[in-house]
Amino acid sequence: MAELLLMRRFEIPDSHTLRVYRETGGYQGLAQAFGMTPAAILDEVKKSNLRGLGGAGFPTAVKWGFLPKDSPKPRYLVVNADEGEPGTFKDRYLLERDPHALIEGMVIAAYAIGSHLSFVYIRGEYIKPFRIFSDAVHEAYEAGLLGKNLLGSGFDLNVIIHRGAGAYICGEETGLISSLEGKKGWPKLKPPFPAVRGAFDCPTIVNNVETLCHVPHIITRGGEWFAALGTKTQGGTRMYSVSGHVVRPGVYELPVTATLRELIYDHAGGIPRGRRLKAVVPGGSSAQILTAEEIDVTMDVDGLRDAGTMAGSAGVIVMDESTCIPEALWVLARFYAHESCGQCTPCRESTGWVEKILARILSGKGRPEDPDNLLDIARRGAGTTICAFYDGAVNPYVSYVERFRSEFDYHIHHGECDVQPGRVVTGLETR
Amino acid sequence: MSFAGQMIAFTPTQLDEVRRLQALYPDPRAALLPVLQLAQEAFGFISPDVEEYVAGLFDLSPAHVHEVVTFYTLFFTKPVGRHILSVCRTLSCHLLGAPDVVAYLKERLGIEVGETTKDGMVTLFTVECLCACEMAPMMQVNDRYEGHLTREKIDRILERLE
Image (cartoon, rainbow over all chains, first blue to last red; front, side):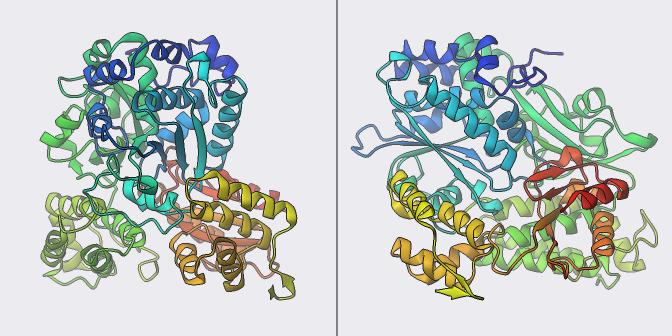
């Protein structure tokens, strides 16, 4: 197995403490970074081909480079720990098992972009991760790794930990900013991008937890070394969250050149009970579904895009042959209808309609025109909304129906499931 | 202000915390979420009276506070039980039996989703992905995540609630 970067401390007792973090090489990247200019750090991150690991896969150095050079306003670094994409749980592990890696990456990033105030937005349900991370921040302040004149560098950084209150949309970076400002989490129209006008109308960089946890390694071992672990356009490793019908669900750190088949069979132990694989969602629920025949793909951003899906948050949901695909899509449609923030009409309306059509199909009252209507409704709104939420819903709507059309038609014509005949789905009437 | 005989007002210590939070952010209004979290801890849930009280602390309209409160699932606008069970119902948990978990909890507690037991002990919710899919099916029990749920495990969890 390849060397672990992000998960290297996960099995060490007390890995969340400053003592263990330091004993295992922690904060060496920060000391080294303070000996470099911010421009040199940006250059190293650029060479590393690090891409955002929260979902969008945007090159990190390019994002940092969008900050205006001449703004008199303060700059903010916002850590997106609002993990919420169905099928994803890697950031929870990082917050609980290696919180100082996030603090170190955050301080280096803040130094590189010239920010003296950093916000860490943690989803409200993550109470244990919040407590562990808060304790780590307290330790870091006591040790002079946060606050004033860090390690004698003259650089100051304060951190505010901000807890969310339950809303998937706040993981979208402009929705997160609205929420951080004390409002409902409505995304904002771009441009202006947050780097130009973000939190409190100031230039803001929003980075995912896992992305920042990579930064210390890039500093200590070099951007070129990191880049060499991956593909031409994406360096390093990432954490894949694997769940559903696999023998060993969990988080796996692999180079981005690993294939979906290797992840499912070599690492997660394959499909339990001798069943066959039916379908896989490779990058969180907002990614297009793949059939069992489509898993020989590398899981880097470009590899999965070329396969007609996306790497997203690397949340891999595995479905075996017993899975009813229309039911799986209804579960996700209920999710998107529930989580639509209601700001844009196409998203607010279509997510509700799609959920209702699928509930009708599953209740045995589907109409022959339903699948085509569903596709039509789904596609009409694509690309018309303020944020990527709705496009993220369209991906499953369209791909599940197109790839497993016969299952939808069977439900409609026979009033029941062909995979599990007689199965009754509960909760079709409720939200 | 009062609700069911309860005075809606923070203690002086809680008010100090409100002021500290408001001073922490570049804009004091950014402290609204943490202050609402404090209010929910203090008053149990966010009634219209609490919204009005909090609005006054921020010089915001009660309508703005109401809009925020109702946007987020973790703010309760009705009284809840002493313990809150939130069963994840999204895809990985659904595939591994979340509907059975919900059905069993409804049967054991004698309530529907969204309701509280008559003795005020337990409120049952279903929620969207809690991002603990590796332990599916799972639920949140107050501040803890409990995974790999079976009937036996659910029985044990319910027995421990006081």
